[in-house]
Length: 273
Ligand SMILES: NC(=O)c1ccc[n+]([C@@H]2O[C@H](COP(=O)([O-])OP(=O)(O)OC[C@H]3O[C@@H](n4cnc5c(N)ncnc54)[C@H](O)[C@@H]3O)[C@@H](O)[C@H]2O)c1
Image (cartoon, rainbow, N blue to C red; front, side, top):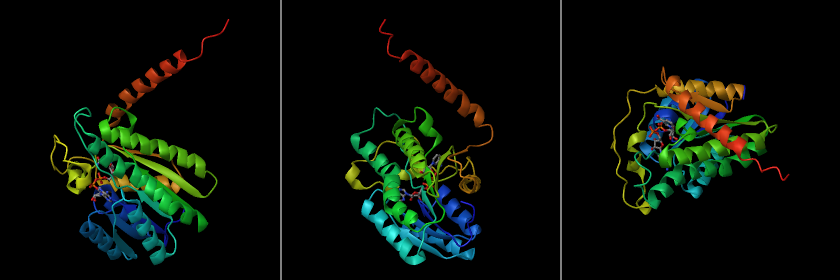
């Protein structure tokens, strides 16, 4: 997508961290923004920040795990602005610690937000984005945790990475681009995500880090700027990590690829002769 001025962006999880930075970065480019978040007051606060940059903005309380709420968000966005050009399926929750001590309710909660939130966004927005013609873009927020052993969280983000790859290939040539954001260690409130966990998913899981706010990671505005660049140039993968993070990220990734390459080589059906 080449031009941003006067276009419309919707950001889920826009009330904090990466989503708030994305909303403000879009506003800084002259885009009108819809800020959706399960925390209504935070969404309103970010929408006000966007308005202060001279664009139109709307805050909508949305739980992305609930399909009907995401459809209501899409209705509100199209009703208010007529068109939506960039959809950021960014809302996400984190559950840390060992996978084996978690319960089914923990899995259901994390997947309901991290995976189904993205699915709901695509279902509610994409047909209308395609119907309006012209260029558009869908950004799904995964994580570097998608690349390896990342517990429940990593499993949900691996699903987001995979579905984004499928979506990009399915939408090739339609004018709608797809990017998948894989950040690492960004300053945000993600560690205390269980504050928004609905009771239907059972008792809160034990978390080693409680409700700590991350303050020693990457500034979310750096992530937002990298994302805007990727949307502009149509890049599928967007990785962001703190300085010297590459030395930590690449070796386990290379080792995994090598192991898979070897396993693929061994997997061929034996020669019948
Ligand atoms: N912070 C990191 O280091 C990091 C790394 C990799 C990926 N991510 C991903 O980035 C995205 C943004 O997270 P963040 O780090 O900015 O965290 P954050 O907690 O600061 O922001 C996430 C926002 O999503 C909202 N939210 C939570 N559940 C929701 C729901 N069901 N419906 C709608 N909104 C909901 C929260 O209220 C919050 O405002 C997430 O998908 C996260 O998994 C973050």
